[in-house]
Image 1 (tube, rainbow, N blue to C red):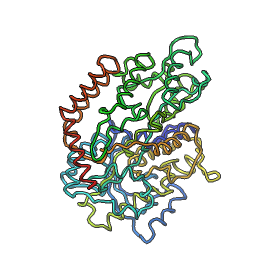
Image 2 (cartoon, rainbow, N blue to C red):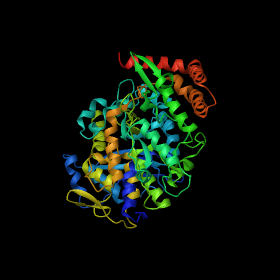
Image 3 (cartoon, rainbow, N blue to C red):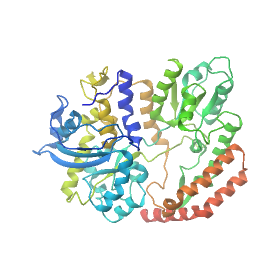
Image 4 (cartoon, rainbow, N blue to C red):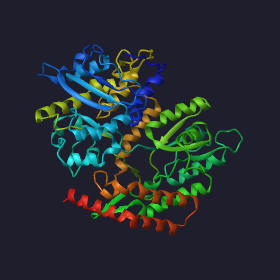
Length: 524
C-alpha cells in the first residue's frame, strides 16, 4: 500500500471526518491515474468475517462491476487491504474502473449512448438534469429502484427529501450519495466576540451589530483600525431566507414565483447593500477569488465568512496556523427574523448511482446490487469509512472510537478518496460507532441535524424546464449583474425591478410555465 504522510491525531481526524465532504465535492481529478480493479482476498483486520451475517446463504462472492470518479492521486492496487475488507464484509467480487473526475464526466454520455455500462455508476450532481441523463431515463435505460428501497434498512434511512430531489416525474431511479441537506454556516471569530464581551448573534440585528463591532472596536486588540466584518465572495442569497424569501422558487396553488420577484428578496438585497455602504464587507466582493476570500478570514483581516458547516474545522485550523492558537472560529446557521427561523436546503447529495438494465438483467440481480450498497452502509464499513482501520487508525474504548497516533503506513487517503467518498450512500456517521470529537465537530453534527426542521426547500429540484437547461446560464447573468449593481449603488430599486422584468421577458416567464406544467404532471 502507498504510504500516507499524516502524522497527528488532528490530521487524521480532520481527513477522515471531512473525506465525505471535501473529497466527495471535488470534480476535477487532474493528475489522477485511472485503475481497473479486480477482486482480491486478504482481510484488513480481525473483523473481516463479520460481514457473513449480511450475506447469509451465499457461498460464492457476488461479482459487481463499478465505474466512478476518483479524485485522489493514484488509485490503490487491486490487492489492497481496504478493498479486500469491503469485499469480505459484503461477500462480493468488485471490478472497479476509477477515472479522474474530468475523464469520468466525459465518458458518461458516450458510455450511456453505447449501452456498454457496468452494474452501477454515479451521475455527478450537476449532470442531474442534463439531456443525456434525462433522455436515457425517459427511454427506460435504468431501473426504477423506488419500489424496492423499503427492503433495505440502511438505504431507507436516507432522508426522503433527498430521494424526492433526485426523482424524475415522481419516480426514483437514483441512489443518492447523501450529504447534509441544510449546511449553510456563518463562520465567525469566536475569540474576537469574546474580546468584545459580545454573545453569539441570534437575530439579523445582532449579526449586524457584530459586524459593526468587528470593524470599529479593535477586536484583535492591536490598537489598529485594520479589521472588518464580512469577507464576501461574488453574490449570493446568503441573507434571503432570514428575510422570508423563497429558496430560489416557491409554489402557491400551482403557480411558481422566483425569489427575485418577491419583496422579501429585495429586503435581503437592501441589507446586503447596507453592509457594503458601511464598509462592513469587502468592496471587491464581486471579483475576489476563493483564495482571497478565504485568506481574509484566515489571516485576521475579516472576522466572518459564509460557507458550509463542514469547512469550519479547516478554517479554524488555518487561522491557528497563521495567527496562533488563540485564534478560534465558531459557527451558526440561522438568524431569526420576522418570518421566524429559516435556512435554505440544498439537494442533499453529491450525485447518485444509476443501475442499467443492460447489465442488470433481472430483478434478483438488481436486489443483490442494492444489497451491496445497503451492506456498505452497515456498521462494519461505516466504521471503516468514518474512522479508518481498527488497530491502525483508531481503537475502541468504552464503546467509542479513539483516534490513534498515525504512522506513515496509515491508509487514510486510500479509504477516503478511493472508497468512502465515491461509494458511500448513507453518510458513514449514521451507523458508525461514536467517537472522540472536537467542539467544532460536535457543533457541525448538531447544526446539520437541527437545521433540517427549519429548512426551506426548492420545489424545482425534481422538475425539468427545457428553457432553463438551454438558456438558464445566460438568464441568470441578468439577475447576477443587477444584484451586483444594486448592492454597489449603480442602480435604483426601480431599475432592479426592471431587470427582473427583463429576465421574465427573455425567458423567465417560459421557465415558470414549464415548471408549472412539470409540477402539475407530478401532482395530478
